[in-house]
Image (cartoon, rainbow, N blue to C red; front, side):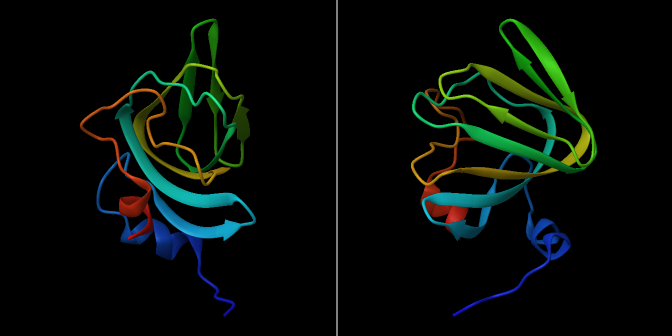
Length: 121
């Protein structure tokens, strides 16, 4: 069955920061939405690239060798194995595209870590 949703509706459903929700799947990639605020956790995804698309707000992604700043409409792909730390000083809405095998916090377990089952709910 083909379904249609709006990003605004999907973001409205999110109750917690840093808790992404799967809104679709294209082949072996999940499309997720997340609301971010504050600092996340340093982590890496050993085998998966991770795409960030900022819909609202501003996101800084820190790397061990620098950082990038993303504004609404900006897209950044974090290459597999690259340690990164997402930071949003104010509420930020992002769309994430990543392989279905991608662990939420990569190689780190944090109190905010969510299983894929939790992200599918």
